[in-house]
Amino acid sequence: MEKLFTKKSFLILVVGIICMFLVACGNSDSPSTNDSEEPATDETAGNGEEEAASEEGGDEKLVIGFSQVGAESEWRTANTKSIQNAITDAGHELKFSDAQQKQENQIKAIRSFITQKVDAIVFSPVVETGFETVLQEAKDAGIPIFLADRAVDVEDDSLWATFLGSDFVEEGRKAGNWLVEEMKDVEGPVNIVELQGTVGSAPANDRKEGFEEVVSADDKFKIIKSQTGDFTRAKGKEVMEAFLKSEGDNIDVLYAHNDDMAIGAIQAIEEYGLKPGEDIIIIGVDAVKGAFEAMADGKMNVTIECNPLFGPQLVDLIEAHFAGETLDKRIAVEESMYTMDQAEELLPTRQY
Ligand code: GYE
Image: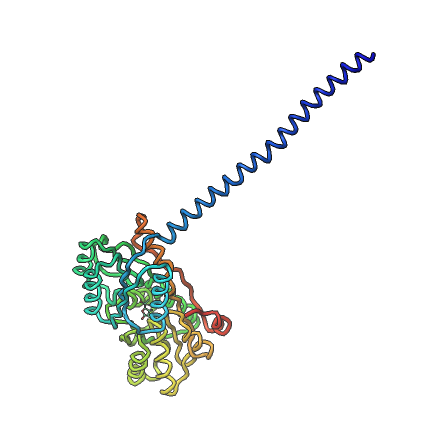
């Protein structure tokens, strides 16, 4: 019995030892697997992050020439700042040129960027036509062009890498649709005066087209006057004075291709003795702070958003191009529309 017990105990002991060994192995196995897996995962993630960061940050420091339209509006000032900051914040070198709304200044600036052998050119064309030659010169020098904000009317789309900007035709349509809805119970005629942007510029051409497309569907809407105010407050005021002089109380609606002209016109309307926002419905485009202030004061009815703060998006595209990506030829900026009743609430949060 004693022997048997001893044999049994020995067996139990052996089995016990084997089990303990297996469990111990299992236990020591799992932490060691974890130990070896966790750092590996971390390392992989770490490498991935580093790679992404170096791609995003773009190791390459670029020299970027930026030919801007001018400083004609609140929108433009915000846009200039956004692009300048995005370029320098990303560690690139910026060469800036303000064309003061003159095409010849832009052509000169681009030629000077080519001579200085910049890596890339950001270009907001004042007008749509007449840039083929200089764009070809940049292409021949191997310098990619990034159209920002405004498009060019050029057939050969190999002359630029991409165009990042708003859909101005759609903005015009939004303005028209808002008016159609606002006036749905009015019999008409509804007499509209239009303050156009800079003659020949993409936003002036397109905002006119989109608006006309919508309002022309109902012949109660009549555009009785249409003239350029060159996107400035001073010109907007001056041209509105002339409109009031010839049409006076006949005017029901002002459609201004930007808020600055609308704000200038509001002054003219007040000086004439009418109430902007009531006697004359005021429609603007851009959604700058000044428009929100005018709307909060009940002097302006609606503004269609055109977002100028696309500097970071633009720099990402430039870096993507230099990382070898092929970019879409047309990239749109997202935007909305704001009415008088939203103005007070949104004004403190507006960034431009
Ligand atoms: O609406 C206007 C500016 O090109 C979108 O230019 C831009 C326009 C903007 O002067 O205020």
